[in-house]
Amino acid sequence: MAEEYRVLVIDDEEPIRRGLARIIQNLGHRPDLAVSTADAMDKALASPPDLAIIDLNLPDGDGLGLVDEFRDHGIDATIVVLTAHGSIDSAVEATRSGVYDYLVKPVEAERLARVIDKGLERHRMHQEVVLLRREMARAGRYQKLVGRSAPMQETYRLIDLIAPSSASVLITGESGTGKEVVARTIHDLSPRSNGRFVAINCAAIPETLLESEIMGHEKGAFTGATASRPGCFELADHGTIFLDEIAEMPVTLQSKLLRVLEEKKLRRLGGTREIPVDVRVLAATNAPVEERLSAGTFREDLYFRLNVFTLTLPPLRKRNADIPLLAETFLQEYAKENGKTIAGFSDKAMATLLRYDWPGNVRELRNAIQRAVIMCKDGVLQSSDLPPAVRRNVRKDWTRPNSFRVAVGTTIEDIEKTMISETLRACGGNRTRAARMLGIHPSTLKLKLRRYRDRDGGRVQASSG
Image 1 (spheres, helix red, strand yellow):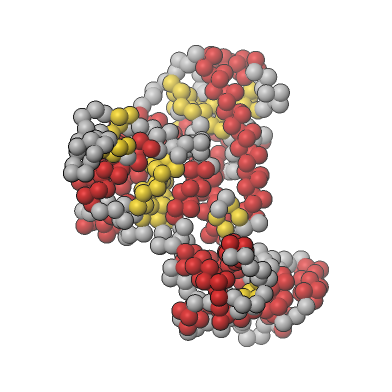
Image 2: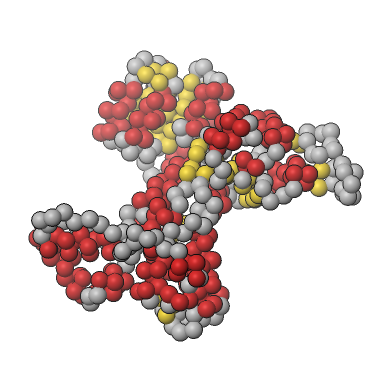
């Protein structure tokens, strides 16, 4: 790589620091050396490194603790751990911390040079991807996920952290919140994206067939098994398997799944040979996990094996401000699919969408828009096109989207500013729609926003975050 990068080496042994510095310089990069966690933080804060090589055992603290400190201070360096005392536990912990590579001393200079080179290349690509994703997230789109609200921005941030690793992930959330979409996004952003993504719903397949679907079977394993067949784990080799509704899996099969996860080998139903598999496991459930654990229907050891990371998806009612953007996205999708030209939603239709609680979450909203597009007879989707349940079952306390309270004595101008801010949030930052809802011209809204900024420097948010 022609570009010069900064590599921070943190090790309390001087011969190792000198040796690493020579390798880094020979690769054309700039080494910076630290002897302790405190020394490393000072240097990293003064000039953030692109890659850091950290000894696990430092005189004033733990190397992985330093990794956490880097993250807390926004130091987004690729991390390589170097230790003289390697163990499975420390390797697992390093992986959970997002470490790029884990090396046990002594390490050959040639291998270390390769790790540094590849780690820096990963850092460059990661920075480019981060910039692109930030632009997409600001626009409210992240892969196939849609939403610019604060809960969704946090979801995007966690996916960014989780995707590059091979760690198992447990995705929780209500039905319809998009758990499979999130799982596919993690796969697509991971190093396994060239491999298969294989999804299986553990609640949708009869118990008698589920083991065969997951583990595969040999010819003659049961009545009707006229040929050998690979299961989902074999199909997902070098890729990702998504086990939806994992808490519904029979306990007897859970123990076999745990064995596959720990040993990375499986045995087909009716078979005797062990087949190696390299699969990342993503699992999801909308069941109350604590209750299932207490009842013994969800094995605790499997839960802890899957729960390296937990990603909890917010229900749609907790990110109400994303409804306009989601609705517009689904409208365009289904209008194109049905060969219709629909300009958008009437104010009444959008107000109806915003005041409904959406117990079925994003899936219910998608289905409602699909039906409405089919029902729509003119160029604007009306409230009457929406499903009767959406029009009828509204929150009784609803007056306006994202309603707010006003204290006695508040000036009219401050009330107006707050009302504009909340309406913009409810409209996902769309000024044209906000102006229509407020009953003013878009140019009038623009002038008011400018006046507020000039008056007190206050920003009226034009986004839903």
